[in-house]
Length: 157
Image (cartoon, rainbow, N blue to C red):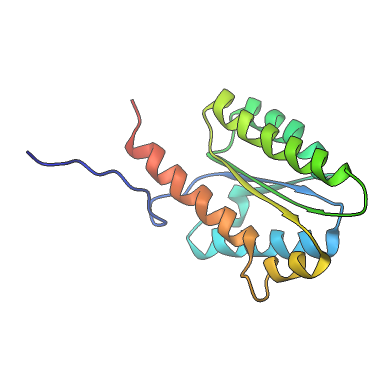
């Protein structure tokens, strides 16, 4: 008996990608966006096949992701934002709802939605995850989107 293994790659994932970006904490989020676009183009996605949709902040990302998914124009959607813990419970609500909303869209619309919304305890952690010590989580989200597009193409019914 031969076991079949399906796994996405970064070579056969050319397609159309939407990036939904929260403007709040732009000093971090713009680096995430740069990383995502760089990862996509380095793996062969043409710039004209990438569109960027800007929203006020992380809380608004799920609705925009849903609208993009409804359009059925993109092979994957990448959500980018940054929620930094402060002195109020606001962080808990925004991080939980943005994460839950993005995941729900993926399931409801059968489209990969890569969650690149940072939820961190400090500005230092946000900076580390947007291109310094801890890499660029925007680029990582883009790679996840590429891999999922490739995998889902293999699993088409």
